[in-house]
Image 1 (tube, rainbow, N blue to C red):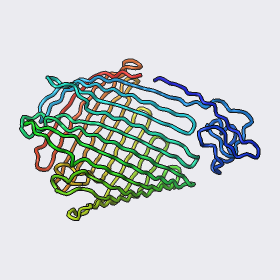
Image 2 (tube, helix red, strand yellow):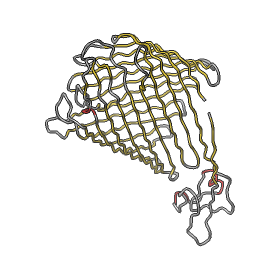
Image 3 (cartoon, helix red, strand yellow):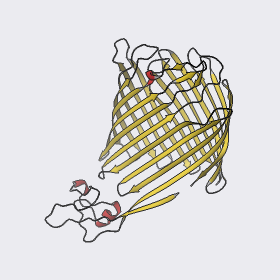
Image 4 (cartoon, rainbow, N blue to C red):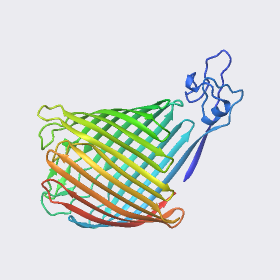
Length: 420
């Protein structure tokens, strides 16, 4: 980890009879929420309210930048219904954390480069870039924002059938999100705006024909409001509502109409946190998905959500979750309802050995039938030195779609990760 420090001189002064707020980050106001700030608090918080008067400049406010990076090398062997394959993978990752005063910003980028065996050239399988920021406008109000960009391309099918895919489509997704949170005594209100654009490239079959996936391209926007009330220091109740709109570029091939339309979702539930050992949230809601085209009937569903995280000590972490939501249209089916259950665990057996496990089960119900997916795996990380770790993983995945044969895959990968 490499740390850089950017010192900045902070001056807080209120000349008698003047309203000038002096130099700073624009936060020196006469906001009553900030009034009465003491000199010590002003220096500690990195800003001064209208009631703070300093006769001398405080110590320097320091903005710290923590930079971390890692490079992983893996050898992977997979076997299943699509045949056998060996791949060499390169996994770069870099992150930066900027914190100081009332703001905190995090930047992260990770990628996955694959070099298949045989005559195929190396390719970028995935790339994710994410930035998040948080700014404390006052003691009771916080602004947050996030920007994400992801590129991904799945492995092709290992099949000699003419209609099997030899090249999977490249999928690009961009997301922008902003939120504001305000607390009034025990009541916390959160408003969120989110926009997303997803685009699919062409795929190619074994016979050389191209498959146009532009019907999957969509632009979506969502506005959400959540109200949470603290019953006790441990338990809170909440109500949440959201409305979203999806706009597709082309009609879906199966339903032959565009899937444009609105979705409305409402949820109520309870959440709790006991020290750092137990966190839980359970919600129940109802959603309606209506379509602009009158030929499409509206879709409604009861939505269940739950998540529990248990940390009895510093060595063990267990997480279980259940979620339901509307699933976007595909080339084979229109909009549906997705149900997903997740179980994750991490155990630090010794100072140098960490064990991991995860399982996810997903079921998607559409007008074309039902799709089921299963993914489970175990892994281990052994710390050789302060910066070097050995990694080993085994995963099993299975998939069954309506009207198609079931598929499965076993994958074993081993490698090393160097981090700073």
